[in-house]
Length: 405
Image (cartoon, rainbow, N blue to C red; front, side):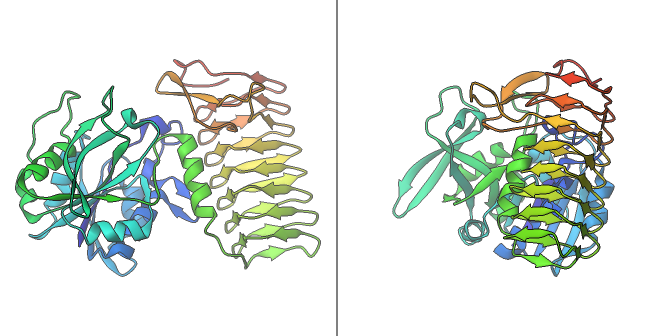
């Protein structure tokens, strides 16, 4: 099955983490997010991959090259992000005649369900959610032992059901001629219009996914890492001090160092070049990226520290995401829980929204630095290259601000 993977967008809802790289290249465990999509596609039977790129495309091109897991890779450029149908049209120019699959490069799919989707063409992936009005909702009818898709409505105020479109499709060969759609009410060229046409021309099966995650906002990136870190199997290839205590599914890559007095409770991934301790405590589904540093008496809980991020000493970071080359000064403390036990809120595209998480800390863009004894409230974002002064308390960000200070 030839497969188009959509990876052209920046991911504005993920800012500031995407200020300097495309969302599909954000780290999820040991690989970028889009690599998990490609891996699932290959496991499902993809014979070739066409990856549609745009924003900061060189990062995607460099990572994949011309082959991935033994499957040939080609790229199609979408310089202007005009919508998903436009992206697929760009990718389809690299395809041969015949049916083809389309996957979002910023989503996680369980492999078994995706394999069923590939075997059920024409088909669309489906998933049941608590908030269907935030997605494209599928219209269906029962047809024998299958659920037939008859249409889709984007983000309806009154959803007809809780069954949504996962952004995973297998289109028939005829769909090559259906990609030239008009603009939607949102001013975009929508792939759901192609799905609508497919539903009128042929039988489209709704394939239920056992597990699926749309990774659009920072807390969903944290959830994606939780999913993939749970799949780790213990492996110690790096330099671990004899007085360190590693418990459970901990991976220490070659070139990583774990010092004396450190306790790491898996699942946790310590990537090559990273260092931990002495006397540090790492727990709760944590990713320490390449060359990250966790210093003396630091506690890191359920967090992602990207490449080169440093939490030097005497600090606490919980349920947080730190971008590349972030440096938290000594005594920096992150709050990750509201006193009223309500879900933590954060700002996305100027609007304060619920994360849906009882515990969520901070998001810090690449290059951010905090002064010693900085206190960061739950849900706060620090912009790319942000700075705080010693002793500063950052309780909330201005939704209109582009920097934190």
